[in-house]
Image (cartoon, rainbow, N blue to C red; front, top):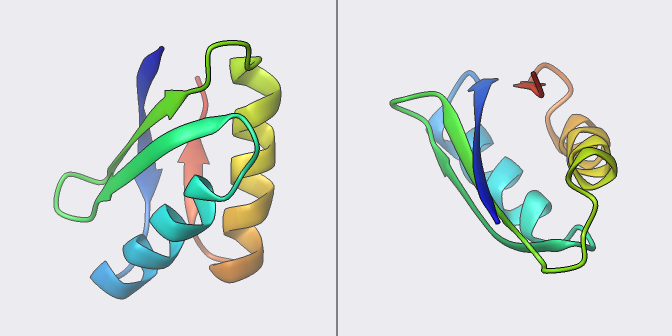
Length: 73
């Protein structure tokens, strides 16, 4: 399953860090962050629980970019 999330990130370099971090989270098959549109597209592994995976993505991204935001709803 693929889903798109609205994000807030200050620069393209920060967006790249968020993308790389999200890809490392268990349950994420692929992630792409577009700085210009302020969106993150996430493809989940088949058996992944979207809600818990995205909470883990949010937590991981906050560690590398504390002022970023991912809107889950």
